[in-house]
Length: 253
Image (cartoon, rainbow, N blue to C red):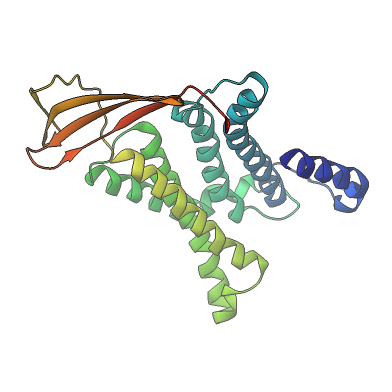
């Protein structure tokens, strides 16, 4: 089904591609349309990386009858730099003029958004955030949010409540939503603590203000799978049972 959708999409692009072509052309990379074009290309690359990491294990399983896992490091190494670059371009694009180079006015128009970005970075540090990538996401998120809010403020000052409507001003509201998503992802990674701990049955280990004790290890095996389940007591109370399951047979038979 997926192959059919991709094939039909390519056919439609080939047949109707001339209708998608704009009448004008990008005069400068530092114009607003140039920034939009670069951001759209980065967004397409971002989507392709996610698609590749999701579909590739399924393709390998279908062709070679074996399972592989594309883990978090793959996505982090590729998507984080793309996401941070997109946040920066989202901050710069709203202050650029249409159809001409806007480098001469960028510094003046980006001063207030840059101040907001520094304030967001300082707030993240005071809240205990750590890690280069999350801190950059907080700073660039504030930077991009300041740029979008500056655009909305100027539109509302001139058009009153009508400043919230229209494609350009509505796009700024969409920008704010995307920025909130990026900052939320950065916060979830920044305030998470992880560490490998060796557990022995009957011995307690302390980490992040909690005490862990391995109560028992249970191995199970049947005709289709084999699993290992560990009973871990948290702070001497409730026992949790994380497990790893490996399927040795695939299919209905």
